[in-house]
Amino acid sequence: MTTNPTLAGTSLQHLLYMAQIVEARDPYTAGHLWRVARFSRLLGARLGLRGADLFQLTLGAYLHDLGKVTVPDQVLNKKGRLESGEILQMQAHSLAGYRMLVRYELSQDIAVLARDHHEHWDGCGYPYRLDSTSIALGARIIGLCDAFDAMTSNRPYRDGMPLAQALERVREARALQFDPAMVDAFLALDAEPLLHVIGHSDLNRPLLACPYCGPVVEMPPDEQSATFCRVCTGKFHVRRNRTGKVWLEDFDTVHGDPVDMIAEPDMGHLSDLFAGERPAGL
Image 1 (cartoon, rainbow, N blue to C red):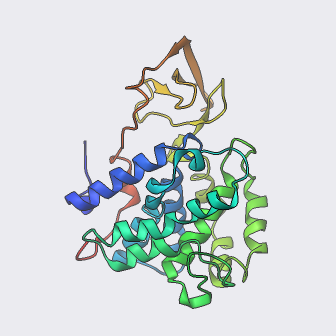
Image 2: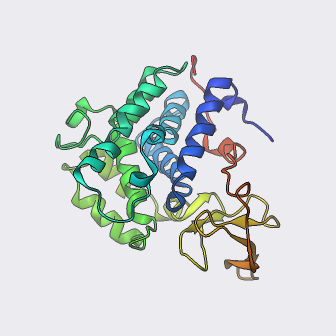
């Protein structure tokens, strides 16, 4: 496995592995961390962030949901509307992520990004109902990108929005949920790089629908390898035709065993994502 030297270090690698394992608990959010980090990097660069600042933003975006390790499976994977107590359990992930990250040798600023990415510009977010510029710049960026990925991603109860519709939703939330400057910068991004991220778990690796139960299935890095649906345990080949269309073909109802369902963190795909200067102390 090739590791980006900027990602070297036991603590940081452990956190990145843990973040991927937490994400794998929900088969419908495959690639969410990569997409939010990629969107955040695009928006941060548009706003003028460079070098160590852009690295720190990207890392904070990748780790923003780490606290979901504390959310029970029956809440995290519930298909219907959450009850009031379940909403509180879900919302607790932001503070949980903060408390986890401050115990590691990371900048305090990164822990704040995990804590505050659900705060809203108008003060109606959580956990502290912060408003406007009292919310860290990086948290404002990640909050918008996290919401945009939720809009454009498939869920058990709905398909993801088309790009134009999601951008209009972002526009409607200007000065309400989102910082007006963030919205203006995000809407000014070219559509092409956004489309290269939506519905993917890495560059050139689109998410695929399980033919039997619908959740997203990640393409393996090597298209010759088998891949598995973590809901129905179906085992599939990846097929691609001459026009580039990709789909899944099953192994004649062969299913993976429990070992196949274990999440296998992939550090290799992070090298390009985290290109840049790693700050001292990270």
